[in-house]
Amino acid sequence: MPGSRKHAKKPEWQLSIAKERIGRLFALAESEFDSHPERSHKYVLLARKLAMRYNIRLPRELRRRSCRKCFKYLKPTITCRIRTSASQQAVIITCLECGNIMRFPYRKEKSAEKSRRAAKAIE
Ligand SMILES: [Zn+2]
Image (tube, rainbow, N blue to C red; front, side, top):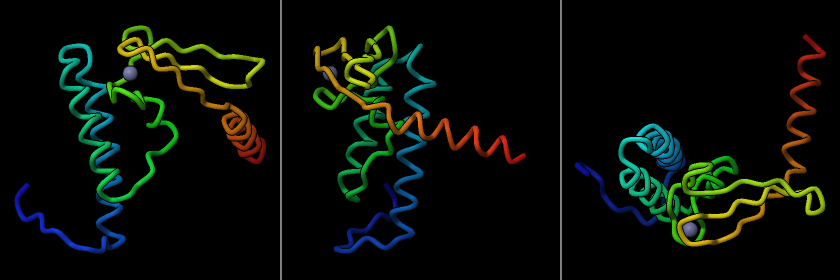
C-alpha cells in the first residue's frame, strides 16, 4: 500500500479508517461471493488481519460472517448452516468448510429489536 508507514501507536483516525476498510472488505466479500468465492475468502482474511493489526474487535454482525477456525467467508446455505436453538437461546452457525460450530446468543438482538420498536412508537 502506498504511503503506509508503521507507527507504534495507532491514532484514533487511523482506527476509524481501519474499521471502515474492514466493513468495506466484508461488503466486497458479500458482493463477490457468487462469482468469485475465493476472493470473498481473501477479503475476509484481509479484514481479519487489519482487525488484528489495529487491535479492533470485529463488530458482532461481521463476526458471524467468517469462520473463527478456518477464516472462510460464511454464506448461509453455501458455506455455513444457520440454526436457532431455543434451548440455548442462541444462533448456531456451522461452518461447512471445516465443520466448526459457533454459538451467538441472541439476547442482544432481541433488545435491539425492542429499542427499534420503542423508537418507532415515539415517532
Ligand atoms: Zn471453518
